[in-house]
Image: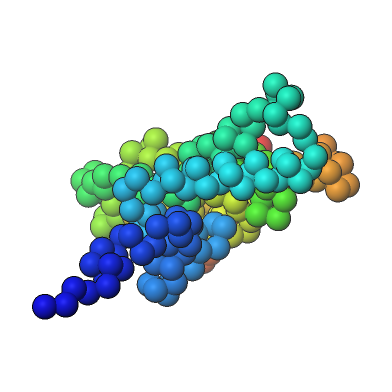
Length: 239
Ligand SMILES: [Zn+2]
């Protein structure tokens, strides 16, 4: 009887030394999914891998500091910066890429609510995909339910927005991702979203304009067809 080669006996041994990011990327590719900055990849991360990803990003971040010629060995301010930044990216500001979406309990619309409902302002925090500079702003959500629409708790809109914005984003794409998600969870007759945000890549660098904000909106369903409803929504937003 001949034994199989050691690699075939224990496949786990064969990929030792392969960076965890490579393994995750391979799974995403095998599933033919995207992994752009504002995509969520939680389905491809196995238990325990986020911790290993943290180690990997720390190491790479240390390389960035080294290349910036910062003496992290002697400068007490930057000794733990690589780890702090890695942790901030993976577990705070870009968490919306790595964790599954918040559980949102949908209730049937028992009261048959069919009046315009507005939620906001919800504070949103993100970073631009171009510079990784903060993007901070507010979002208002208008929903026109129908009898078959699901109802979700008010605080859930903020949780959904936080999950979408917790990724390197482009405001134009973020608002569409948020609209798709709310549409998917509640199926209302109409959905309107307005987002107003300051992009710090314009304040801290570039044109260094402290006051410019970007405002964009998405109108769906009856908000598209009914100019009066659209006007009502826009007039009720205290801006
Ligand atoms: Zn930018």
